[in-house]
Image (cartoon, rainbow, N blue to C red):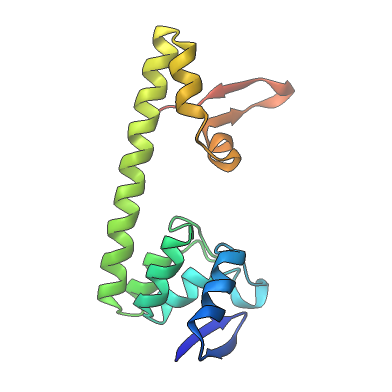
Length: 148
């Protein structure tokens, strides 16, 4: 039996297939303002449901997303004293940050060298959301890549 809480409404799932279908549909779906715009990952972390957190992360839930009070799922797990869940989320966050830093370094090197082929190869596998994060959108339609 699995307890999933969305928009302040607990849903008791007796079938793992149901949870899997919900996750696949949209792992980053956000609840309304009455629940501080939390995702299922935020809620699962807040209640220490580590198995749900792992399933959501595997399905592509964004561990860096912020809920309405600017807290991550890891912040909520820590606040709820769910140490194992917190440690798991921190580990995933570090891995994602390291990968992002590596990508930025490779992009910077490709741009500096004027290597258009490498740049295209680095950008091709990224989702459109990931590509948007790389752009610094400035007024009047000009854009530049963001690097540290």
